[in-house]
Length: 487
Ligand SMILES: *Cc1c(COP(=O)(O)O)cnc(C)c1O
Image (cartoon, rainbow, N blue to C red; front, side):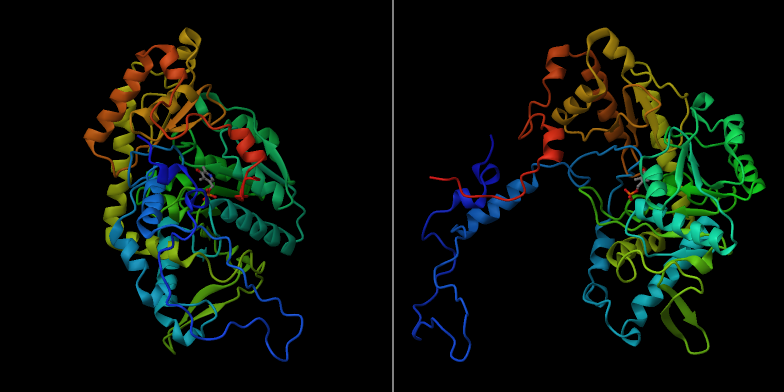
């Protein structure tokens, strides 16, 4: 049964006179003007705020909070997004007053502790990537891409090289071309490679002295490790270009291999994915970038530096910095959660996290492949892409229908219709934090849905507050303000 306190707005629940706090009657005269100040309009009428008793307000927000799905309430196998559990210990640590009440305008000598943590975080990210230059500045993965491309552009400009083209494979995340275009490059998409991998012959035909950067996700968005990545890097370096590794899938390879070791020149991390910062609903995130030493002088400002002689941390501007791409020194709250996660697990723990993420994904793949096609192989890294193409052909039930029906079974849907190279794609990423029982329950739900009557699945979800929102209208004509109904 739906609770009224969740489906009505506070304004609609309001009853005149039903406040929570009853003030004593004022014993000072009312003021309607301030002597010596003209043209002051004092609000003398009560503001049209909702009048509601405290229990009703509390129920309203608690009930609202249960209408959505989250990692804390449901299994959330959203591929490419690494919706792993956010340890509550790190939430508590990030909220310690020493961190949470610091202000970016405080003098550096007052925030030495915080700066020392950020400095250490830079070192850890350099170690994990095998790339020594770190900027914690960007607010998310997409901004990391954009920032790294600006850094590359500054590097080429400094060398008086006119390189205008950024290349990527068909399986690229949409943010890759978007970042390249925003950074002023021409976007070149490679034709689809065989078996989901970058096609080296196709790549070769596109490489020349106009090539600035090749952007590639590894493991790629089909959950496959690009086995020829070192060769790809060699080809790029051969024409003077750079390799950008989209690090959104780092959860598959932590402590196993490093972008810097397989030829990457630049990369971003998604701290909110790989290192457990909470995410969803658009942020906040943190998208630090890691670059080779020759690119480090161009990184955005500020970076945290350490003067051993004075035992002092400070915020500095790299010699040929591109400047700032956002305010201050990054989303520190999310960086801290990532820092505590890395410190808690240590090198061995991170490696085990990746091993278990890959194991969980392969287990799930083995449980669904007899009723869902998995076009790109029997083995995967930390995620795999299934396809409902055959089911659609047989019964008309689409990936979208299955995704919606999963909500009735208490599971968030996987990523759907991405990557574009797979028809009726369902990109499933369980992460290492899920138990065998959860994986089995999810596989069973998927199996059941695939054999349910088409009408039932096409009408789903049946158990949620709203059924299928009109996504296009919601995006194009959002209603963001409440206005009183005209009586
Ligand atoms: C999530 C993701 C991005 C973008 O990262 P944000 O942090 O959401 O901006 C880029 N590439 C891939 C492959 C991703 O999964």
